[in-house]
Image 1 (tube, rainbow, N blue to C red):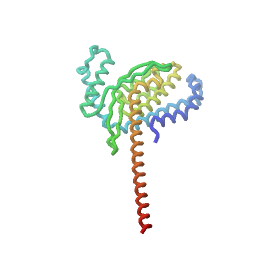
Image 2 (cartoon, helix red, strand yellow):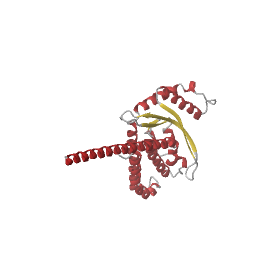
Image 3 (tube, one colour):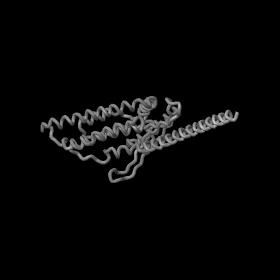
Image 4 (cartoon, helix red, strand yellow):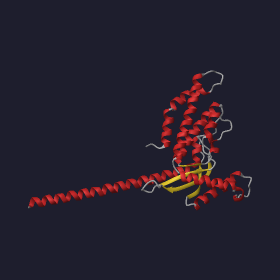
Length: 275
């Protein structure tokens, strides 16, 4: 079965030609009476909302226990943040968020979770500026499978805020309101969410005839959690290699057993023939 990110990519690929063809239709005034363009606009935003809803529902099916623990701890720590903050400059919101993340990591570790602060760093390219981003990463083992499998979760405390745009259209604002304030989920679901919302942000900026900064684009946004995405790819690659090794070992063992059985039948037949 294809991953959620692959399904979202297929959706955009299948609609890319139609989107390119209709991209100029959104440079119109509301009083032009272009009913076809307005219909296409309505269909676009309805499809974005439905797609995002599906992604969020799929994301909520995993990490339920972790999500509840993070929400409970976050609310407790937020209420005590004034006492827990160790920043020299308490007026610095970013600094206080650093203290908040660290305290949540400590609380998760005390409850038996393997949690840590994670920092993504990326270099400047022609398309995106360089930057860094700090968030929480939790690694655990799957309890639903007989074979232990490492599961990686991203915890972003200010998730909804990452997609806020001051002069966005109402449809985009409604889309952003669907996002959880704190994201707790797998990186593949995170990538799918970023893809959907950033495409909607691009459409909203185009409708408002505003320039979309590179820091708003999906290629930049996804870099914020790239450290976990790359780590997950390494874990899956290692797991795939291990599975192939186990299959090859099983096949080799089976081949040896078949060869041994054939050899036994051969000698048994020979013995009968000699007799």
